[in-house]
Length: 597
Image (tube, rainbow, N blue to C red; front, side, top):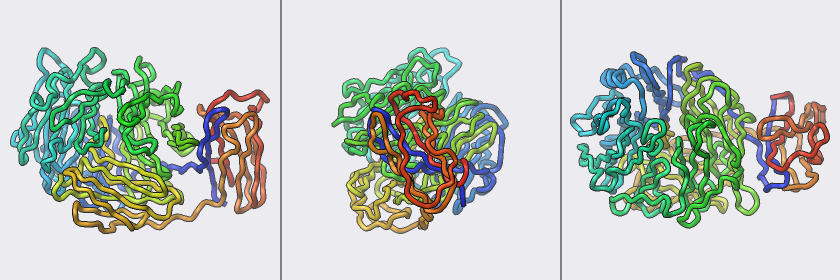
């Protein structure tokens, strides 16, 4: 019998958690999918369909050092080819002048069908045009260029950039921030020639530098989000939020109740509770940082801090190096992966569980799904590299070269889309996609990048759980066209062109279900006892164990007992192995059948 393992959540005197088996990740040897082991200092990763062949490619980012270079691996049918970076000597030469790679984003600025590359380094920024997978420096010709920060500074790196069609004229514009520079760069795209209009759009002098770290970097975690759903992209910058009012930006964070502290290392906007608006999650630099990790729920345009409500009170991870959002288990709500930049701490995977009354809680399940690798890791990108409908994770590493967490999937259904603008920008950046299925509404918003040093693949992905069909997909393109699609097949990616319909691009058969099932404990919450039920479809040795969120064993309810096929129930009295009452909180229970995981 093959080895099986599953984990579910239970809560003692807290809130109800939904039952589900935890989908597992398998750590692959990267060479098995064509990515060689190259040991170098790295931080950051990009997944994007650079060559427009329908498969997500990988840009693995060099962090510091000279005469070493980032790598570009193109994907063909789930296998990666040789590094094509040597085909672009201008890009390699430029990277060598910058020491550290601070910003790395791919977008089709000239609407020709392939992804171009914006680079921000320690001393300058540059734009590279993609011509048949060769990147040519066009900074001088296009006007995308920088300079040292005003004043006398030795640190003036170009930390972050972000693309959007802010004025909805059909091409992509670029905002960039610079350490020790209170002025944002705002490059308006006029037919492939860019003009810095930061003063005209209200972004001159709006980067509060502060006095911590690289001054201005914390407020420079740039990403675009239509937070008010009015059709034009607004600019999120660390703890700041600039509302777009007919092409002029006004900072509104505090006026709408969004008041996170200023020590902001990574941020994310996503509809965590699937109520049809964007919520905000930010994490600080690290456990020694005086700032806080905080979660803010959008309630009809006003933000309320719900950090404790979602189960993150006291949550204190070490230094985060990426922030990736996606529905890893295809259950219909988005989860959070945080890559931890520490040699001894494991990464974090916050499972998003909808519980009674529509409340959602986030629980770290990384140790239980195969994410136990430690050592040097800096950054990550989330992508479906094999296009099987389950989100994988790529992590760059000095110690390992590349870590590939391959999602082993489950029986849940999904649907995906590859969007192409025809009147809007070709990358369809700034598109709002809404999926209606099984009484639930989910939203995705296309943006580049995802957050600092991170660009997740732009393909739209929705998990829809056990639903066997969708009601509709509603697409609001960047220039305002709204299209409604019904009858799209599940478990496929669909290529959709603006105004022209859709076509199937990939199909993946479902794998057979596992040979046991584990139900949610009942009652839940409970005091003092609760019952856990499970079913075996074949005879097997079984263990059932209770853990706390620190991964410590609390109680063993079934200890490697051989059991025939059938239905079973086990009572837990809320006590640990020594007979002491367990404190109130969130607990995990794990069922193992056929061997220890």
